Length: 278
Image (tube, rainbow, N blue to C red; front, side, top):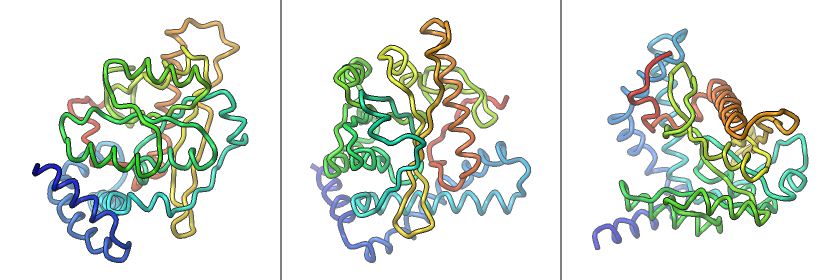
């Protein structure tokens, strides 16, 4: 009962006018800074070792401010505008389905929404919600509000995503979280990334694209960047080798984007816990 009341309260707060929601951002920044700033600065210091302590601190605070604003303004995804930056028209990219691998930049699921608005039949994945039931339900309700098709994480998630691809749909997967998968060097750490996107691409014989969103110079407008990860069709490699090569190529693209736009990435997640510096 208490969780349902909390969910109803949070949903109501997210739906108030933007000018009223701006009042919520400052206390959220304060709370996140109190609990996450030290650890974020530690991670950034290991990655951006050329920056001074004050510069690291300023960068960490800016990233926290961006995350707080994105969280509070999550439902504005419908009101924002999106410009697709792709060398090939989106309809041609997804004429028979494709795999889109993304990173946590901007408002969560804004990229999936931008794809949907561009006419792409896209399905995304959401966690099982065991650790944070209220936040999970908030995420589910947000996807429903945006009209984005989704699959809850379970033992059969991979097969459900593969089935969607076999029907000509596209799938959208966040690939920057730490998960048991492909061992890679990522932002100077020896860690792992999920192999889900690469495995789906190889097994379903669908192209794998790296997709991410950045704010444009215009207010409330975002640029959705789409890049082919790698074309391995002409190479005589085994399925396992293709998955490994695609995973490494995806890690490099994610790393490059984060290094170029560090204030936009979701540093709140303890991505490098128990990872060793390479």
